[in-house]
Length: 92
Image 1 (cartoon, helix red, strand yellow):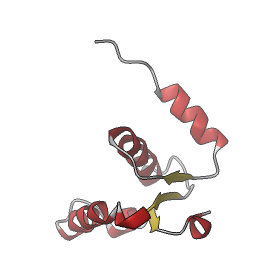
Image 2: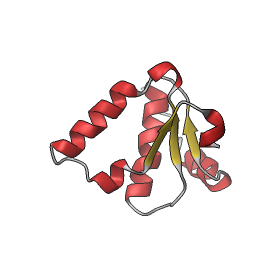
Image 3: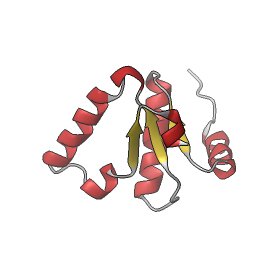
């Protein structure tokens, strides 16, 4: 299996954006979301990273990330990098 190089494309999208808003999605959405969060955690950017939580879609993810903090795997400051709201106008 040959994987397509996507790091350059992601880097270019990041350079052209003012922030990230993830809509409900699957593995690819989560991969890109967490990549932007880890770039922020690493200090590679200071752009907002947000989730559009339509109909509570991301509630289970929020519970998981809260648990990561409670168990000591994630600092609260890094959890705070993730903005979650169900109103697109507020996110924008």
